[in-house]
Length: 388
Image 1 (tube, rainbow, N blue to C red):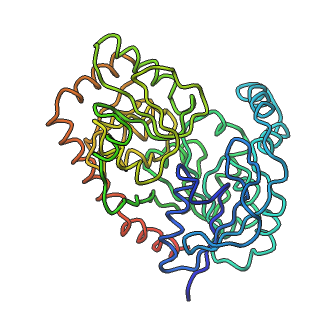
Image 2: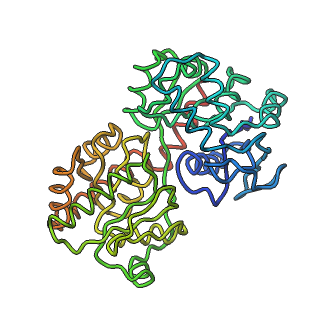
């Protein structure tokens, strides 16, 4: 019997190329080799506003059936942020937390009704990321068939009491890393729930052309950051550290940014912000860089450092992220820092020691191939389905 599986995620599409959403799409496309896979999602494209941009109804993306449903109300970002400040770390009620979740979004009555009405049409429902309405309100409707991929880390919202029930509700949990699993089981005491540490593989272009990236963007000697340019991703600290490093060392290294900015990028000749780029340009840029920087404190996996290692490039990461630090220690594929002085020393070492940088890149690639190859990912999913 071919399993029929629904993957539920807050937004989905080829234009959504990062985070839990890309994770979901890659898993869907690989599970489709042996299962009947469908996506349940919203019409939203922008995670800040949840404004409906895709056409509602049934369509197909890369051969996968996608069901899209309109969002009841776009997110009022200012209202949400003010309410978050009111309740995070302050005394509040459970009703306040439910209100916070609905303000967080994306809340879609039609999506939730579809899940409820099609409960018996799928063998499993896989919910991606714990943080949004699609999971929080959708998972309880099919909890006996639900598999949660929490993509969780130690951040303020996860301490809201409403998540205590959610993390003890699914039929199974799929973690990205051992560090994520240890954090969640320690926080929610849910070791009794069947689980597997799986993560996701990486899709590489057939050919990567770093010289094309250098010529196209007129950059040569640079380090790279890839992802949403956001203070919550550590970008403000990254800019501060990088500009201080430039001043202290007089280095001619540039910082290239790939990703949409949701904060102001410093106007500086040595910071080059290229915005959203294609997957091909992204990999060309990573390969062309001296190394990749990941300044985020909040990661459950970090696909971009996996991409860097598959390009044989070393990484420099924020040591306050147990996940990123764990990757570096287990792979010997990069260095980590806790403060500016360590950032400066690590960056100096990696930029000036080419053999070390090269070996770390190769170490990282071996680590990814051993732990996150697609054959391994697919086998682990299949094994989990068989025991549930």
